[in-house]
Length: 361
Image 1 (tube, rainbow, N blue to C red):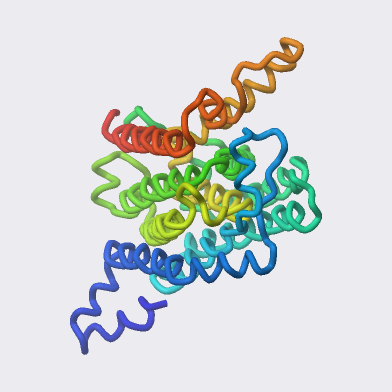
Image 2: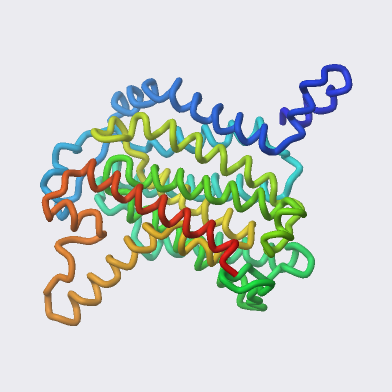
């Protein structure tokens, strides 16, 4: 919005030309998102306590988590509001990619809110059934896939970049909407499964948002995209600003969510943030690279799948002490904060490896 309001006045006040630069607006979108969370964070926590919107701990989690019972939840509302407000102020609202990201934020925010409502007010610790969540996630993914298939970038509507091979793209054809649905559903649930320790998921989301801010900037810059041999997308640059808002909101929320957490983001945050990152990956044509950018999320999901398969194949034996993987390390004696920081380090390593693949071709 500020681009519309202030940039036209650049002839009268020179510094307003800065709003024409994506890098400038991205930096301030991040800062503004941080400030929104920091200014209103404690008030939000107090409000959630007053309304008894608090976490209920499931019986099967490690015993050390019992002390978290009663911690305010639904912090995802604060995160999403800061992202929406910051992006509304600093993004180019005429950009179709920004509108798609807004739609993902609102849709999955409502789905996560519904899930948290069922957990807290209907006292169902697991919230919505897995089937219900998959159906609603799949509906959005298929709808987005169809929109992009018919209205996406000319010549690249059903294509994506492929890592390690120069000047090579993958074409999905009629299967593209299904591919989009898989990406959206996978990232949304991957973040949700990872959100089990104080600060773990939100820190990794910040890392992923930073990665896709860089990838979006590269994809939207004709010279850089040509140099890196990735698909040039003229509207992709604004995704950088939106991802910067996610990064800022993540850092702001981490102030309150770091161990010991004063508030949890709940499924309102986890389901939506995962979906937004997945959507950013789709819009930048870097879906396959998401396997590396979100490497920790992928590992967490795989450990759950392997645990279930191994349990059924062996008649009740366990491959890990508990899945997802972060609980396994907890039960091995590592303190929660140490597990979180080490997973962040792993996330940063995955980030650097992911970005390096742009030149390993």
